Length: 102
Image (cartoon, rainbow, N blue to C red; front, side, top):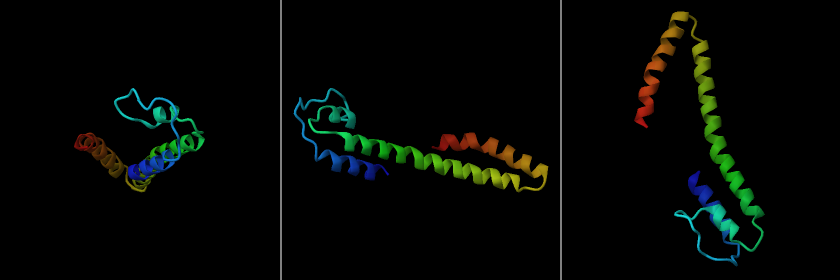
């Protein structure tokens, strides 16, 4: 996703012309400061920024919601209440340990 987003931004930046200073007063040369220095319309570039950011935020969020929905449905399919509590307690104990792995 990162490479595709970078290529989309680069491809649409090539068509812009810059008529102001070519010095960006930032440590990192970001997209929005570059768009501010453009003489041509940046509507398409701003649209690409919104689309790429929407995909970068939307896809992982939907994936996480789907995985939690599947976990919850598997917990609710456990017939005994003891099995449910055991499963929930095991997840509560192992979840913080899994966070430190990453």
